[in-house]
Amino acid sequence: MKAVEVTGYGGVDKLEVVETAIPEPKEHEVLVKVRACAINNTEIWMREGAYGDGSKSGWRPEGVTFPRIPGSDITGTVVAAGSQVDHQLEGSNVVLFPFTSSGQPGTEHIAEDMSFIGSEYDGGYAEYVVWPADLCFDMPLSNFTESAVFSVSGLTAWHMIEQIQARPGETVMVTGATGGVGSLSVQIASKVFGAKVIAITGDLANQEKLKELGAAHVFSYKSENLAEEILQANDGPIDAVLDVVGDALFSTSLHVLKKGGKFCTSGSAGGQNTNLDFRTLYLKHITMYGSVLGTREEFQEMLGAISQGKIKPVIDKTFPLEEAKDAQIYFKNKGKFGKVVLLPSHE
Image 1 (tube, rainbow, N blue to C red):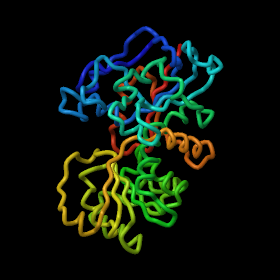
Image 2: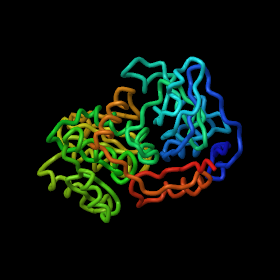
Image 3: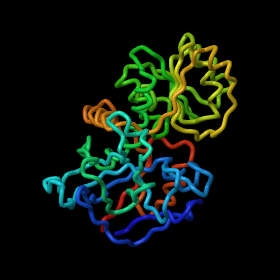
Image 4: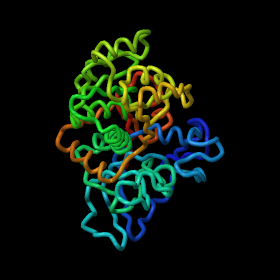
C-alpha cells in the first residue's frame, strides 16, 4: 500500500511517501480501507517534537518509534476482520475512535497507558490501517470526507464544553474560532448546549461564516480594544473561555471572565508559556482546566449530534495523500476556515 511515514523529529522533510505492506488485523482488530484522513495539530506537533524536549516526544513519555504513519481522524470501509471479530462488520463504513487505553468508562482519556493512533500506532496517512473492532463506530454522515473531520477536534471540543458545564444562556468565548477545534466548539457550545458564543478570530472576513455556525458575536484578536469589545457586547464579564491559543490571548481571557468564571485550554498555538499573576486567579475565583480528547461516551454523543444535523462539517481544503507535505504546510497557514483532509487515491 501507499503510505506517508514520519522518519524522525523535524520539519516536513521528515515526511516520506513510501510503499509498504498492508497491515494484517490481529484477532480483535479489523482492516480498514482508508477513505479520508483529516489533519490535526497533533501529528504536526508530534513530528516537530512539541510534546517533549525534541528527543522524546509523543503522547507517551517514551516518545515515538520511527518510522511512524501519522493521522488520527480516519474514516473508511472495513475490508477484513480478525478471528475474534464478527465478519458481518466487513463492508461497514466506519469512523475510528482515536486512542486505546485501559481506563474505566469516563476516565479513558486520562489513563496512564492512553495510546494515540498516529503516534503510538500507525495511523491514517495510508491506504489501509488496522484498529480494534470495538473502537470503530458507524459513520455519522454518508460522506467519508465530511465524517472524517470530527474525531479528534470534535471530541476535544465536546469534552472541553462538558468540563466547563456550559448551560443555556451562559456566554462562552471561543478562541481560534476558524480552526478545527474552534469551529466545532462554536457549533457544539451554541447548538448543542445552548450557550451564547463570542468567537475570536484573526480575519473578520469570516464573521458571517462563524455566525452561521452559531456565534452571536465575532471579534478580531488584532483589535487593540478586544477586552472592551467583549465586555460591551456581553454587557459585562463572560462565564467561560474555550481556548486553543495559549499565551497570546491568556491575559485577555482572564480579564473578561466573571468572578467564578471558567477557563479551559486544549492548545497553545499562540505560545506555550505565559505570565500569570496568581492574584487574578484567586481573587476572581477562576477555575482552570487542561483538556485533551475525551471519553467514548462523549464520542458517541457527538456522533449522534452530527447525525441529527446539529453539528456540521467545516472543510477548508482536501489534498491527495501523496501531497501530505503540502497539506501540513497549508494547515499551518493562518486564514484557513475549518479542516484540511487527505484523500488516498486507491488506484
